[in-house]
Amino acid sequence: MVDWEAARAFTEAACAATFDTKPCRLIARRPGATVNHKEEDDPSRVAFDCMASIDLEPTSDIIRRYPSSDPQSGNGPVSYDAVVTAHIGDWPWLPKMGDQILIIGKRWRVEAARRDGSSRPAWFVSEVRNAGS
Image (cartoon, rainbow, N blue to C red; front, side, top):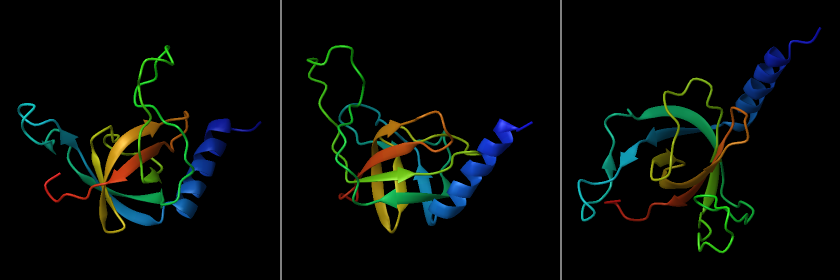
């Protein structure tokens, strides 16, 4: 009899070994003290290093921040520059909107995420161009 959980774990580990070739650092962010303050590092979620992959020429999918049952809600599409994926098997926390990822010598801000039930979600990111962001 086939152990499907073991087969799935093996497949996800093989994909991670093949595709996750870029070292990166995940940095949790939180809103500033007031609306007039900039976002800041979130000390409740300690930054950590991992391996990931980045696609600098992603397809132009339409991604919405918050899915709505009303397509006329004005919930505009997310603008993003790249897509980061990684195997999240033993991560202490998952990046969410506003968190930052240091990869390939650049800082990226998570604009949206897409999970499909596997251990390999995708984060749609935009390059942080201001040092104080």
